[in-house]
Image (tube, rainbow, N blue to C red; front, side):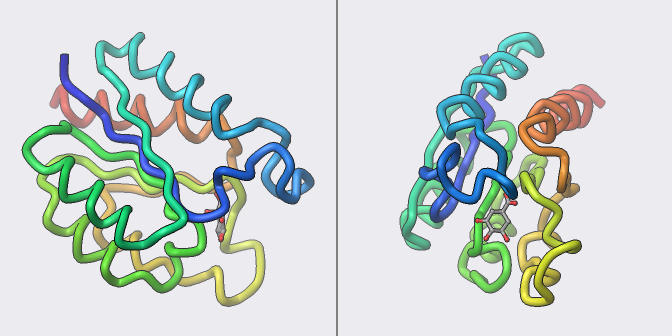
Length: 145
Ligand code: DQA
């Protein structure tokens, strides 16, 4: 069964209690469960990883090369400045979907830049946990075409 890698960056381990008015009350486990269910329904296995450390995410992206069919990634604040994550994603062959629970473009100006967007197949922002289901649908469609 083809694998989708689901990657989360810093502070997303605190989902559920971190600024719930911005990010909602779903925990990271809830996000992973919803994404895993969507992936299973589409015929994929989901592998999930979260880290607060940039290098660990670079390692996870490199490990996905030749192993995972697609990457769904919410890089947290790394979105806005982590060029090592940009470069690592650039080296990945399959579809990449960037997901954000909130809409960074509707927030502080420093969140308006994504260094991940230029190397993503597409980005889904501002739709909360539902964005992850949409990301799986997008990946499945992309891999089928
Ligand atoms: C986020 C948006 C980022 O700006 C922020 O740093 C996060 C979460 C989101 O999912 O909305 O940690 O990626």
